[in-house]
Length: 514
Ligand code: HEM
Image (cartoon, rainbow, N blue to C red; front, side, top):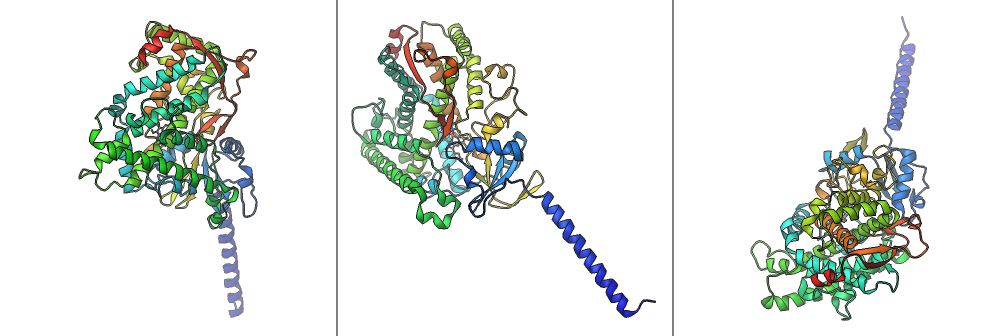
């Protein structure tokens, strides 16, 4: 029989062995369940990896080494980066309800009047109300009503290009930004304030012109704020970005308050034709349903739509034009389609777009190679979740790199070439159902401006190409068009796309229609 002493030793041994077993198993399991992560620095983590304005490309390169789901530490911020269609579907569709929040950001707080708009707000009842308002004001019916103003603005842009024919090379982005600014300000503030002209080129120095100048300043800023990564250091405002953004926001706010006062003064004389979103909301304030809408909420909604809608749309059109200048055979095919379905005796109309199938393929391919929002707006988990077997804690920030997904050789053949033909007899679309093509995102936080944004890209490209003949500066070959891009509030070409124009149709056709 064993002595008391040996029983004690045996128990101690069993305890030691089982503790060692549990500890080792735990270690192995934890290691297996650890999300891949590149080697980082103490305290600052992976911040030095992220070069300003090309974050989407850096994140894509990291994914090539660490896989479609990896983790980054940006100071105190922990970020999950997703780079495959399957995992994007997991976040944006299967577990959309768990990942629908937006994380707090300094810029978001400043521009949203303390989270009163849509873009930066958490997914709560207030966001649902504002999103419903925004979506109604951009519904197909509302878009249809503005068709005449859209056409006038587009023809004003065409004429402005024609006025400079033979004289100089034109920076197409500047022209398109002015056109989109005019169009959006008309939609948001109404024709009475913008007087239906190009607001940026107007000789009058008024609030609308000031707003366009402020917008252009904002579009150039790199909006990375160190306070997002180290909230306790926010007061230091490293690089002064927060101060600059706050100043721009004050400028926006002054212009929008002036516009609001002017619309209130004009209310008794206002006609029902094209009242603009702000006037519609001001009228709603006088009804039972809308009496709780505050002035700040109206300004937050208008600011959101300005920020989200102008640069994205203008840059997509520039990317499309740049690819057409680089690929003359694609341009020729598009012109043939326009000649066949519209002809040269009249200007293309929105009702023609349904027949322009090759144009739609060219635009899908432009969105695929050059998504204007290359990393979708950040999401935040609203509860604990499991993704690809990894446990994701509540409040984790998630970035979906649509740029990487849309250039992935796993989803696309020859992914870096511009080939609209890949969409022939191919049902893949940009509407948020195909997770290998996500220029407008997907799920409940998907872009509500997809209808008007997509329409503007289609009708502008069709009209410009049908009416005008574009050429590159003398001596420049199609392959010299520089497609290098950078991302600020949206992605754009680093080098301006310079073109000269001459009429392709009879000039009378353009002036007749303005
Ligand atoms: C080519 C044009 C455009 C592109 C590529 C684009 C793309 C996007 C993307 C990727 C998102 C984030 C979606 C997500 O998180 O899943 C977004 C959000 C948003 N977009 Fe657009 N957008 C465009 C035009 C517009 C226009 C014209 C408007 C309004 C007039 C608009 C208003 C918004 C708003 C309000 C949000 C925030 C939605 C929310 O958080 O609930 N966008 N857009």
